[in-house]
Amino acid sequence: RLLGGLRLSGLNRVSMSQAVGGFLSKVQQHIGRENGRQVAKLLEMVGVPSGVKQAIRAAGRSKGVVNMAKRQLRGPWGPFVGSYLVSASMLDANRGIEAAEAAKDLQKFTIKLMDTLLSAANNADWDAPRPGGKPANWYLPVVNSAVLQLRLSAYAADDEKGNTDEQREMLRLIRELLVCCIRKQKAPPKQSLKMGVVFIVNHIFKICFRINLLRMTHDLQRTFADPSIPKIEEFPKSQAVTYKYFRGRIQLMDEKYSEAEKDLEWAFQHCHKGARKNKMRILQYLIPIKLLRSKKPKPRLFQKYPFPQFEVIMKAVQSGDLKMYNDALMHYEDLFVQQGVFLVMEKLKKFVFRNLIKKVYLTNASISDATKWQIPLLYIRFALKICRVEVDEDNFDEIECMVANLIYDKLIRGYIAHERYLVVSKKIPFPDPNAAPTQQQ
Image (cartoon, rainbow, N blue to C red; front, side, top):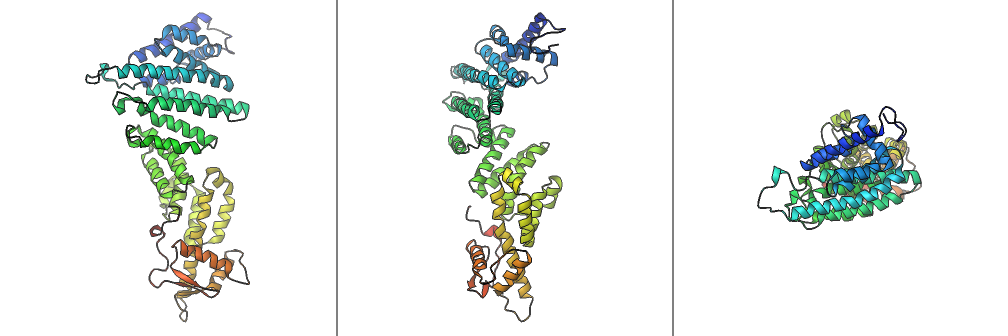
C-alpha cells in the first residue's frame, strides 16, 4: 500500500511501476479498440482497484506518470493521459493550484489530440464504412472527462486563493475547445466533433453560474443557430436535459417566462426517472414560472416532490390571502434569493390582490340591494385591513393605483370611479389569467 505520497509500505517502487504500467496498458487497449467510454472511465478511476489507484495518484503527484504515459501510449495520447493524471492526482491531494496548472497543460494536449484525430477523419474515405464500425468521434467521452477536469481544478484553485481568476481563465481555455468542435469537418455531423458542442457548453454554463458571469451565456446559445450543428434533441439525452435546464434558468432571469417554461418542462419530462435530485432542481424553477403563468401544479406533484415554500404561496394566491402571502415571502425570502426566484415570487402579489378583489366582488354581489358591478373602494380597503395590509385611511390613491395596474395587466376588466367604486365588466369581470399574458411575455 502507498502511505503519504511516495512513501511505500508493502508495495515497492517496482510493483508501483508495474501497477501504473498495467493501468496504462489497459488504456492503450481501449484506445486501440476506439472505446472512448471505457478510456474515460479509466481516467476517472471508475472500477480501478484501490491499490492501483493509489499507485497512479502517487506517480501523478511526483509527475513520474508523464514519462511513463509517453513511453507506453502512442501519438498524442501519451502527453494527454500523463497531464490528465497529474492534474487529477493533485486535485485528489487537495492541491488545487497545482491541479489547475497541470490542467492548463492538459488543455493544450487535448487540442493536439483533437487536431490529430480530426485530421485523420478528414483524410478518411467517407464513402467506405469505417473499420470496426466505430464513429469517427469515438473519443468525445474522453474530451468530456478532460473538460470536467479543467472545471473542477479551477474550482479547487480558486477556493484556495479566494478569488475567481482560475475559473475565468478556464472559461477562456474551454471556449478554445469549443472552437475546435465547431470548425469545418468532413465527417457527417453525428460522427463529427460537433457532437461535443453541447457538453462543452454545459461545462461553461456551470462555471458562469458559479461566478455570476451570465452575460457570456447568451453568446453560447447562438452556437446552436448554426445549421451545421445538430438540433439539441439529437444530442445524448442527459446532455440535452442539462442544456435545457440551464437555458431555462437564463430565460427566467431574462423574464422570458414562456420560453423558460418550455425549456424547463422539456428538461423535467426527459430527465431520467431515477434522477430525483435533478428533477427537484428543475422544479425549483419550473414551479414558480407555472405559478406566475397561473398554472396550478397538481397536488400529487407536491406529494412526490415536497416544496412547502411553493405550496403556501400557491394557497395564498388561490385564496387571495395577502397576509399569508406576505408572511410566506418574508419567511422564505433567503431561500428564494438563494434560488434566484425571489423576483418571480414577488410578482405573484398582483394575482393575490386580484383574487382578493374577486372575493370582495362575490361578497358584494351576494348583497341583495347592492349594485353587483360596482365594488365600493371602501370594501377593498376593509379587505386589505383584514389581511393586515397598511393602507392610507384619508384617501384611496394607493388602492386605485393597485387596481389600475390590474386593469392594465388585463387581470380585471373595468374602470375606476375616482374615490368611489371599481366598476367591473358585466360579461367577464375577471378574465382567465392564462388568456392575459403578462407584459414580460
